[in-house]
Image 1 (spheres, rainbow, N blue to C red):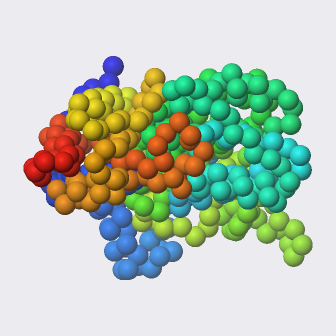
Image 2: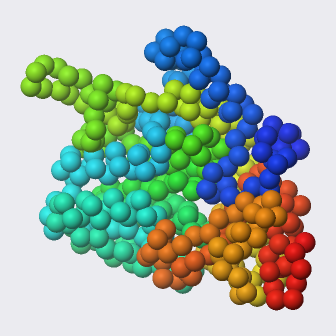
Length: 402
């Protein structure tokens, strides 16, 4: 059983919590003091000793970051690489698979309707280069991927890979990725998982899910620094990847005409990285692990459901998340104001939310193209939610701002 999170202690250790009501954790969370200190402390060390010399002093701490990421994902440290972003991780894996011969002319690539733009844009590039095609799997009535339709697509023997999303960035539903993974394994189709919006707020067990690749970011629910990401590659599958942009961190230059890639996920690693932000990500990972992902998920879910209910009771407000299982992303529209206007009103009241436009998720025809997105994290409070609801209610005609 998970232990309740000490919200007062978490807020005390989060400098931004006293300055702003931050309900944009699906964009980038407020970091802890510990994460901030790790980043700034190492930058100071670099300024005093030199970059290479400072990195040598923290080599064991850098190795520990991958170990912590492995614990988070239910994987070995050797199967995880720290990257500069989710998109960088995705690019290494997708193009690595393509350059390794995984996608050929006439092949089919499967994607779901809540695919994020940077992932789908990569698929479009691959399809254009290889002569493959992309088939978008239909959604079920609640907006999640239709598992029966997915099974049907997987059965024709021409599918090179399935790219599926755990939690969409533009609405709060959670896809049944464990069931989807079982279907992919049965069909022998590689499964690439977008876990960008789930790492840090929901359990992500790559073994239980059965994915061959999983990508995520540090800046969102993990509360890590911007410019950090995670890439998991299943043992044995990595040898099918020939990633672009290889350097001394990913390959060995044998002689003037030859090189060989390093084994496992390490072939996706970059030589030149921001050591400071990697250390900050390590602190954030350890903090999440100490709190417990189950405890985090429980509190985030409770806050998000409370916010959905409160917003749905405001006249002229519609909540759009769908799904039988939902995440910490709450999406809604206000009859009397555009999403941009709602965000501006919230910002004027000291509240951070975001608005999602059509360019983020063009395939989801079951959801409005433009919505307001609020995403509470475990350090948020009921008072934070109330302030947003009051601000939204004041946007109705004839109402005054709180």
